[in-house]
Image (cartoon, rainbow, N blue to C red):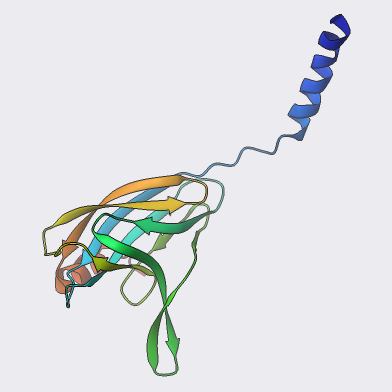
Length: 157
């Protein structure tokens, strides 16, 4: 037994030497808005993700009780047309922000389970590779109000 105990400090040094440097992810989600559905069956969700940590993270999926399906989309230009393309994940670089906006990255809420009207609020859970689940509360806005809010939130450039 004493020979086993004598080997523990060596094992401890070996294990400590193999550990990787600490990497942290500090995710904050703000400006969570959904556009009032035009046809009533789908809506777009927009938000700002800030990664204040020292390592990259990825947004993997979104879920919400108000929609049967939530897909992460990227808008791309194809000739003269703009097309939405589902993507598997969005990178949130360390020390940076990822903004989901009309005409860019966004989440499509499909198969809505209830009518969404301006002023309504709903919960959504964002699933990140490292940060895990982050639950947010979204506000439904008319498209005109949505554009005004998001334009006001843009940094001057």
